[in-house]
Length: 102
Picture (cartoon, rainbow, N blue to C red):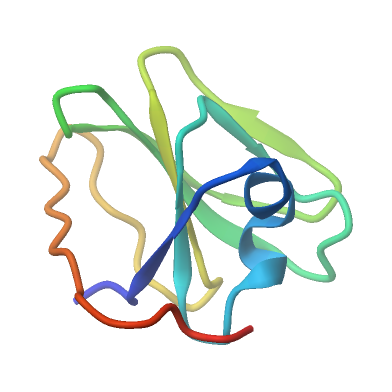
């Protein structure tokens, strides 16, 4: 089971990504790539196609940019989380309730 994801909406939330969510949470971004500038350690990241399939997945070291063609969404994950398998369909289950505080 993957960690809970917070949907990053708005410029600031997309810019901050993992730095703006509580420990143990991931971020779902409408983007094609991610950066880890300002991060102290690595993160997990995966690009997701418009059809919901994982296009790429990798660990991203600090001060790096990662991306690959085909992705329209990016999932940022805590470093200890398992990476999704490329080619598989990503299932997102909405949670109703308040957003967690960072």
